[in-house]
Length: 445
Image (tube, rainbow, N blue to C red):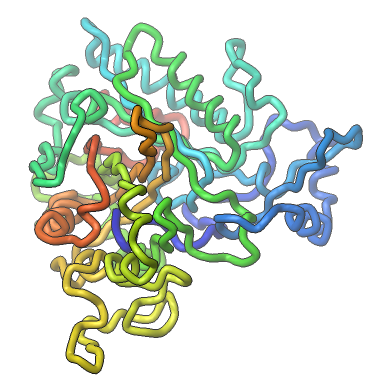
């Protein structure tokens, strides 16, 4: 978890986001939907309550279902394109529901079976992201819903290449992450041959995709682990704002933005790996791809909540109310790391989480962080099993996640209130072109 962990606010996404209803709706439904006035949409959105959330429209609900026909709201009709330069779910605005699932290839399954599986998964993801059913075996769970910003993203783990005889195509950047002193990792819930990230703004749409992906695996692969997460719903706040994590902290102020001049350089593998000295050993099939690190980080909330608000702010380095740095200003004001109080003490403590994670304190290391909160109940002592499914994206984890985590490992004030319980690193290839399946350049190259 870090100062940069979640995109600031939900907004239309140029690379992938494209408003519009599912293609499977008939012309009459489409005409009706297009006739919705902006005033009516905003009026519907205004029925939601004020709780944790990001900007966007969301529907209000009456105590009992109405007999009147209700068109899709902007929330349900939002569609993300499956095909593109990059896979969806990387720069896509944060969704309210998320699933992460890792698979291991079944005994005897190899490159041929993996290719067939990725073909099935690609077609399923393409249809579901367009708001269409998967086919004859569709469970109808999301029959009444629009695309709801669904994204499905696929990646390969270190072990995948040995299972498929593709060791020579395994990227150097996919070497196992180093051990960190704060790790308490459960190997059964870490890594895997294949990884799938699912996000949507409707829980049933997200589950529908999860179930379809699992069914498609058939006898070729079995689930290794699966985790569920959530974020605030679009439209749940009165105005656009950065989200909060389960510690109540504004989380994600300094996340890199696609508008940054060096964004692509830091987040995506270049189209011509050999043209960049840092990627001399990068395989061509990873062009326009990225590397995802996922960490299940448990928050020790009972201990955290014993701290005063002021003590919590010192741990993070930002005000809890609005996310502004303790050195003053608003949320987006540059943090003054040298500012002191009247006694000469640093305003932002030397071990504050926000100070340690700053790119300028880590040789420029930067990542796009798109995590989800999670709550998996309580243990036998009544302690909540809750925290963050931390996911970060970068062109090279050795220049992104690793240096930052090493520094956090050496003295982050937040470390005594969190525990890293699972971990994974996956190579996520570039987006699939029309008529192509994800990973085709690897599996058929």
